[in-house]
Image 1 (tube, one colour):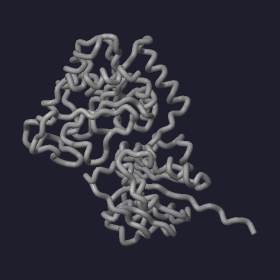
Image 2 (cartoon, helix red, strand yellow):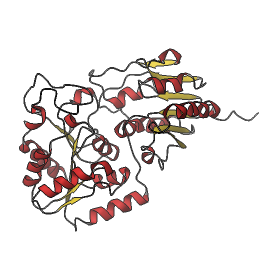
Image 3 (cartoon, one colour):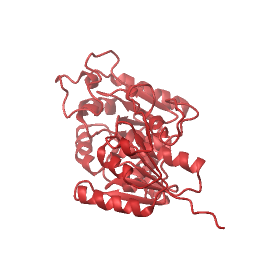
Image 4 (cartoon, one colour):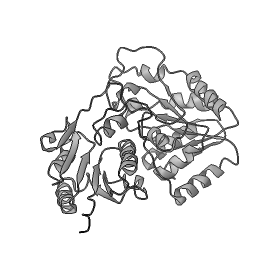
Length: 347
């Protein structure tokens, strides 16, 4: 009698770019432990490019939250139930993805205990911010009951797989450095209080050694901010690539940099996913939340003295709640240059 076909796994992460990147650690773990199990991945519209050519993803499902949020959710539920998944795992703590998981019909329905639909899960894992564990470790606990430390040999790291087209685009961009070593700088963030201010980036650009070409990176929404930074900087050899590269091609370019200066935002996670050297600038948030960089060379720069108001929130704000923004303005350029000197020493 032929063996029953292996039922697929569905992973659900419909939050932001960085959240999807961190979730790729589960793809690595599943591929290592269950290589014959097909894995599908549900993301929000706009993030599908991260996974379209991922070798461990069979199919990418897309939810358009902006144009067809609730009808689209019902269509997804029908699609998920028809697929007869063996296991559905939601990495989010929100009702929408908990709804899809609890009503999926899968024999195994897994998510975090804070999800409003956790009552419909067959297993609910704890999700605690600030206990020293990385978000990747918290996510991995959805696959296996064992506990994972923040950074250890047991922590499977996120990974993206640039395609030949991504590599070619990155190589073409790197060619604009004309053989000079280069640094990448991703100056923006969705949240104002997670974004190192323009004046601070300008100080860094003025102080960086002259032998480096500097590439400004970002998506289409960041083009104007990067153009303004370029216009205000008198430094030669600064090239604005914002909006010109895909996410994965940007990651491929960052992999070849001497150092990548990033905020606590998606470009930091892109670095983690290709093991690119990282200097992460933390303003209002703190690494203790568990979303820090994971590259082999990864350093965090933050205000050198304690502030009673920091951290002021998990995700950041559109303005400093107290109006002074000292968590960003008190960071010294010398702190950023010290990380570059350390990165140069390990090349």
